[in-house]
Image (cartoon, rainbow, N blue to C red; front, side, top):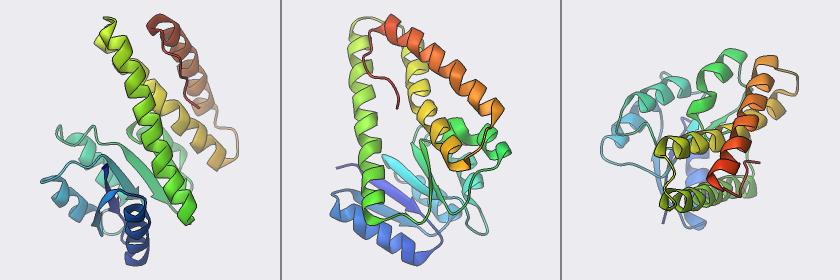
Length: 194
């Protein structure tokens, strides 16, 4: 059973997210802020973190930065959950550090689908990469594919949320899509990020 750490300073949302995800069959943990999240991570490594960005006194971006600094926790996937669109600076700084970006409010179905789709995508790419690994492909190429596979959808989600042209992001996404196509043929991988 996958484990999920939900981090939000809104106790009502925290409780609702926990109820929904437990009913969906996940093991859940909660933290009411960034500091509590970091304290919990000293004793556990969840399969996913749902991280609110607009928290006080330690906001979600600061929490994310601390998680990514720690070698024990830097590979834990994180989906940003927030009530605001990202700024250009936030996109440039954090796009490669998160698995998704979701604007509140979320419906019960929206939350369930978000988590289910994350785990389906993760499992699908891991199965493909394991097949390529067994065929003797270089670990660096496999890691590059994994990173591109997870970052392209995040960039597309952010562009959709912003609803306007962001030239640096559009250029970077195009470059990444071109590179992943090359790797896809090289590694014999059949799935492409959506």
